[in-house]
Image (cartoon, rainbow, N blue to C red; front, top):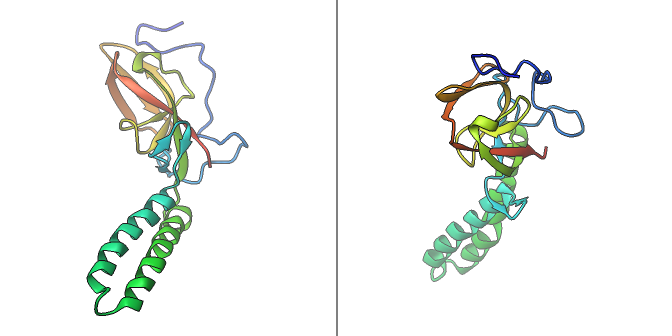
Length: 168
């Protein structure tokens, strides 16, 4: 049952922060209550590792550098092509796991903003980016959503939002 302000009086209470299925807080949880994420590239239901994307990008740039160096320094060009993808992939993995932790997330559904309920994990800015857990939904001309931690977002009622799942 919703009040005149559009607040669902019988929604179940939500924890203070998003949790993984094993009950631990996600790796990318910020003090504001939203979660930094990777996994913006998906093949079907499977997120592609951002470290793999970084390694492939490193390989691309190393190939360009090697093409320039191969006549003068062929051994350096070969080492560059072999080492750069490893360094960029491992570097990105260290960055997203230790320095600036981010959780792997995948989009699992798309639904109209007006059908959001407390507890939903939603991409805050489209189909990629950080995830927030819905704490309160107020229906009106626009759907006003308050996330855990106090962040507020408004969407038109028929706007499609992405529901995500946190994997770590």
